[in-house]
Image (cartoon, rainbow over all chains, first blue to last red; front, side):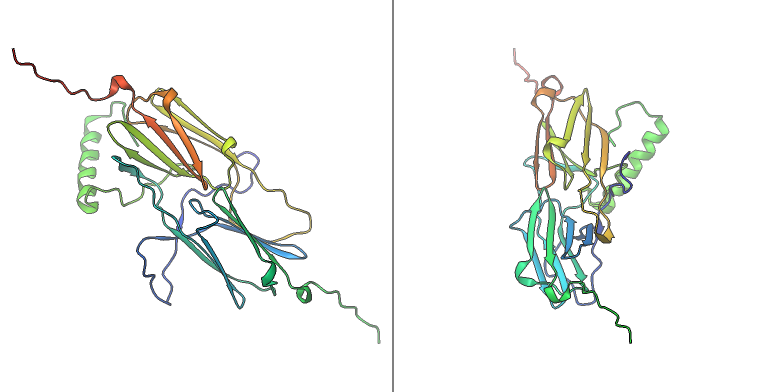
Length: 136
Length: 145
């Protein structure tokens, strides 16, 4: 890790069952690691979801709660047995509370090489406005 | 992982015992995860004919992954690039790492190096390593005279 200041994490993190209840589907659910940054006109969310493609991702924005879910097909290999395992395979789920007003119509999402990239444009009104302080 | 070099007898025995106990708890399947010594974490699937290794490496381009096999050692190298972002940004969260990674693993048997196949799909790397022909278990037919 020569040039990077942030090393790649090896172990995946499991979702802790929330008080709202358990999922009906069996299997472990993982929390995707995410980067979130804000620029003047949008909020960008980047999440690592290996095994997920553009058809197996589900994004919802309800009020100001953004939820991303990714569904992963478990891999098996014929005539092979899993002899050694360092990571588990399962779906992904994570929610964020957004502090900005988002223009829902212009949300863009792409998935490439197992990474979800979400562009959430801020609503015009929510863009930073400079407020002039008048002298009395 | 797959230890092929000679180990002192006592350790061998203790490892055997541990495996046996783990086997009782997990009923044979590796449901308890091992800790990966370095990035990326790997899963291994074994049959008599071949070994399959999978690893989750999201955000890496296939051309930035380098796989080499020497004898019974597989080496995986690669790098995840840090994305270029503008000046005027404010980070809320930074959890994703980047940079170079390298990891070597011992294979359970010698493999046909030129027949090794690797695919990379949705950030998941799959390497199929066929067992070397001369190392495969041979069925011996008993002839009647």
